[in-house]
Amino acid sequence: TLGKLNNLNPKDIKKAYFHAKLKDIQPDLILCFGFHRIIPKHIIKTSKRGSINIHPGKLPHRGGGTPIRWSVYLGDPEITLTAHSMTEQLDAGEIILEKSFKRSPQSSTIECENQILQSLPKFIKNLFDIIAKNNQVFDQANQIPPEILPPFKGDLQFIQWQEHKACNIHNLCLAC
Image (cartoon, rainbow, N blue to C red; front, top):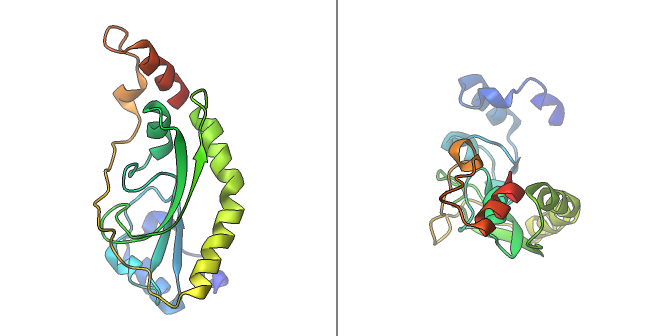
């Protein structure tokens, strides 16, 4: 069925042809990796067993589009890769699998992203093992609503020399 996906453009996810073509394919499961837009409910519900998102942040605490930057900026001792069911609300689905990694206070966003990327093949294999063992539909919401942090851009990337403490400036530099 991958050949049928050739003419689908992710930018058109809200267009009727996209949903019609996806419905025609009848996917068993939809997997999402780092898609930067909210996926409409009718797309999430298209697959027989639901939809799963791979999120590079600890849920429900690091929801949103730039969780690694926030983890670095806030000085989190760990970074986490999370697989969760997709719901109508951003990053609100039930957690299926998570893997945490120790983070040095000197680790930059890029170093943390590389650590997550290196672990991704094993993480995906473990996720597929869980999917194969369970005959469930992945569409449940998490009991705890996510904290959606704003995108780490704009004013957040500028140092306010009079307002920031030295440790905040250090973490801000590592996050950017």
